Amino acid sequence: MTTAATLAPPVRPATEARSSLPWWAALLAGAAAFSGNGAATLNGDEIATISAASRSIGGLWELARHIDGHFLPYYLFMHVWSMAGTSELWLRLPSALAVAVAAGFLVDLGRRVHSSRAGLVGAAVFALLPSVSYYGAFARSYAFAAAAVILSFWALHRAVERRDARGWVTYGIAVALVCCTHLFAVLTLPAHLALARRDLLARMLAALAAGCVPAAVLGLVGYGERHAISWIPQRGPEVLLKFPKMAAGTTAAGVLLFAVALAGAALLWPRARGWAAALLGWLVLPPVLLLAVSHLLTPVYVDRYLFVTAPALALLAGVAVAALPRFGTAAGVALALLVAGISVPDHVAVREENGRFENIPWALRVIKAQRDDAIVYGQSQLRAGFEYYADSRMPADVLKAGDAPAPDGFAYPERPDVAAALEGRDRVWVVWRGTKQDGLADDGLSRVAEVRRAGFEPAWAKHSADLPGLTVALFTR
Image (tube, rainbow, N blue to C red; front, side, top):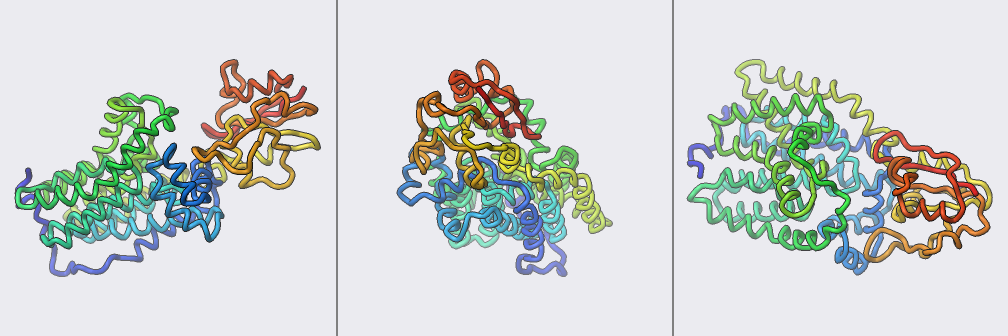
């Protein structure tokens, strides 16, 4: 337990008045995220969002009973949102808005914990991270999760400061939002316990427990559907060395900010020990806990599940420069410019057409279909992405057996006899997610093997630039 003295917020200068959230910073962060929204093409996860959102409420419930149950709150939101359209910009706009909200609350959280300067620098660094540009232009719930986590820490500070029932109710609601945005965002919540003290413990634990009810429900659902993430390999402790890169979206800025963030926690410790521990726990506990879950239950360590730590990385860096006795403003500007400068190649990369590593328009340009050509998908769920981007010149989809995906997943029903479906065809285009070797090896994809058994051999194959990427191959008799 920490003492009351260590939890007390630092004394601020009289000139540092409590103002409304600096929405200009929020707009800047939202604009930075939105700037990449229309450049990179949708990837498989985002196509899955479209597939889920386009179903009826009953269809969504049926899907959640078999796969992606922990995404049900986000899918319900996107079900309503997508009624107005399914363009790339429109689908990704909610994530950009979530980044804007996250930056706004991050500024005020920094002001509450240390100073306005700390909040402003932290929000600026946050907005300039390549990871924020990536997930702020991504039609999944990761930006929502980051915003909800910031809100939970903000609400906790407010509850401790106000000491009334309304503050704890707000905190409980914020925790519930964390649980509903992404299941593994709850790994940030143990850091809240660094702020527990005897006179607040009962109310804090009650609000925390009430807010975690959705996590308990979604966690049980997710555990029952763990077959859906059987593709995740087991990771060892060495994966933690890549954590700074994951949080920032780039190696150089990640390592730099991680070192500055540790200094920020050390500088905050004498003034607000509880908050120093809480912010540091927010940063370092999720990857350690996610790795522990992977080894105790089932492999779940995926980099994108840890995007919720990026705000802590930025805020602690902001605290570090704001704590400088002189030239704090200049140091904050310099840090933001340095992060922006060394991150330029990564910002460019996430805004390229292949910025999501699954470039379906590229694959469509590679396919030069002739009359009577057929197409076979190595993974059935790829069909949805190709139908999203395709034009009328597509080869005949000879295996397709229904216009809607299966109610219990994202794959489409297909004809079982590949040889019969390809009868009378001399050329077939085969597309799969992964490298050439993934499909053409003797123990490769079963669909590719079935095309070969039907009497076809690969004439040539091309793979997109990044992994896992897409492979397009032409098979002929």
